[in-house]
Image (cartoon, rainbow, N blue to C red; front, side, top):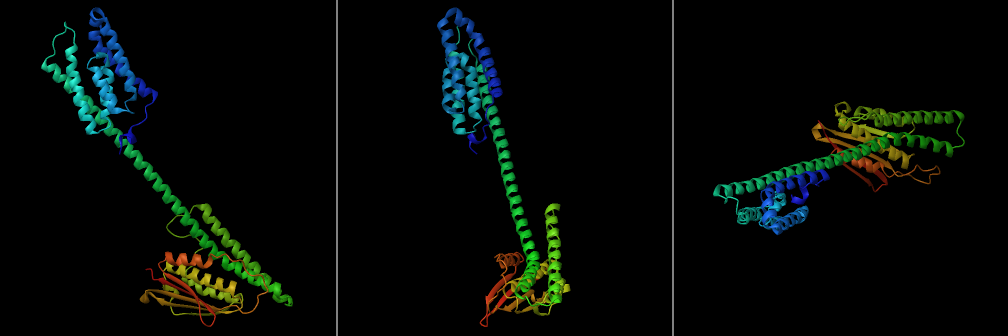
Amino acid sequence: MQPEDYQPPLTWRSHLWRLAVVLLVSGVVWGSRAGYQWDHARWWFFADLGLGLASLVVVHYRRRFPVVVAVATQLVSLVSVSAAGPAMLSVVSLATRRRWREVVPVGLLAVACSLGSALWQPPDEPEATLMDLAITAVMIMLLVAWGLYIGSRRELLASWRSRAKVAEAEQEARVQHAQIAERGRIAREMHDVLAHRISTIHMYAGALTFRDDLPPDQVRQAVQTIEAMSATALTELRELLGVLREGPGDAEPESPQARAVDIDGLVEENRGYGMKLRYTRDVDLEGIPDVLGRTLYRCVQEGLTNARKHAPATAVQVRISGGSDQGGVDLVVSNPMAVGDRRAAAAPESGFGLVGLAERVELSGGRQSTHLTADERFVLRVWLPWQS
């Protein structure tokens, strides 16, 4: 991580207390010489004060030009005692960057300038001893260490903030992915449930439109069938919308959910509505797991709905075979293509039936294919792996 990435912006309060510390350090250090300079070399007094004020202005740009400002303030502190505060701040600020190729040279320069400033001390002051020089060097090293600690802490906090932002972004992406998946699942359920009912309603309504010579009993029966199918479709739609309102969990799909044992009833229901069906199976529907059975039911339902929409007067064959010993269940739904002109209004093409079925089968780890045989039969074949 680059220093610019973890250095926090300074507020006016941060600037204020740093300025107070700098002025305090400069005032304490310069206070021991200001009297002598005023009494014996007044030009020295004003020169020292001017260089200190210039250093105070320059140190404001320590983040933009860290090395230049640090070197300049150290050189100025060699001849100006009032620049001690800005020189100290520039060293600490540079150390927060934690770049040794910058910290080591500037740190050595700061020690050298602090020791060299002893050459400019007034004659009435005692000469600096080795102990004084050692204490000065240790203080500068402590300032560098303090800056390194501050920089390390800033980098650590910045890394935590960065990780938190990444985690929030990943969580948001997971939530969006879950929402999209849930919308797709609900869309498939709505299509599978409602398309089957509405296609039956459409078939009966088309028959009433096409056949104007039906006796009253058959007309009444067809209207009753349309009424019953409409009520069932509305009930199932209400249940699906209730799922959206109640905030369902992710563990199990919500009602309406069919199982494999409901396939027999689905076939008989379609036969009762006038569909010509030949249904064979050699697998025990009771023994099929719920997840597999739910997908198998939707596949049969979509196959019958597709045949009713595109070839309503043809005979449909449904065959279910396989089992746990064969590793899966094989479904084949076939019907001849429609012959002649259909004067009844065609059902609207959604284009999502077989596409949604293919997605459902793929999510289950199965295979789905459709093809047209040489004798003009449309064949839907689905293989689903056995899931224990």
